[in-house]
Amino acid sequence: MNSDKMNSDKMKDKLYKFKVNMSCAYHTYGWGIILRTASNLYEDNLNLEEEHLVLNDKLDKYKKEIDRLQSLLSGGVDEMTENLLSFSLDTVKSNEILT
Image (tube, rainbow, N blue to C red; front, side, top):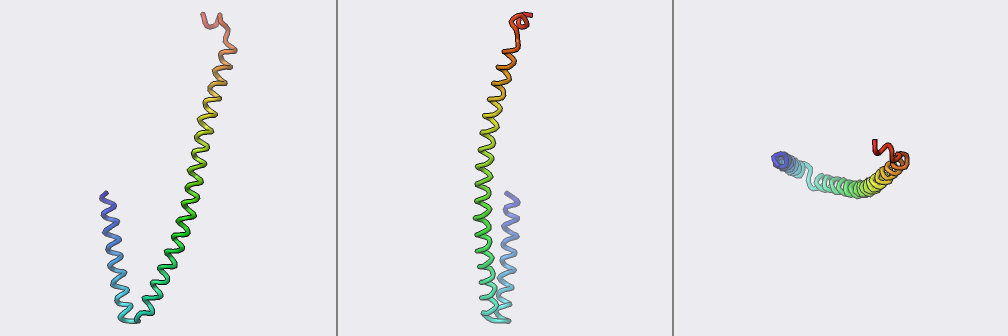
């Protein structure tokens, strides 16, 4: 919780500095620099959204593969245990049990 507050404070500080820089750029160079900056930020945002979708798809695939492997492993262990018990019961003779 405390780190969330720190991250929020850092973000607010960075946002404030960005606004000040944009204000200075506007007063020095006019709207052109602001429009270019906004366009570049929008393009970056679109690229990040696309990357986010790709990574979410990969994450979903990994989760499905983990579920598949876990079910395979648990099913395989149960089958292996059953086979071992069956084998050990087949090899043990009644007189060995009594002694």
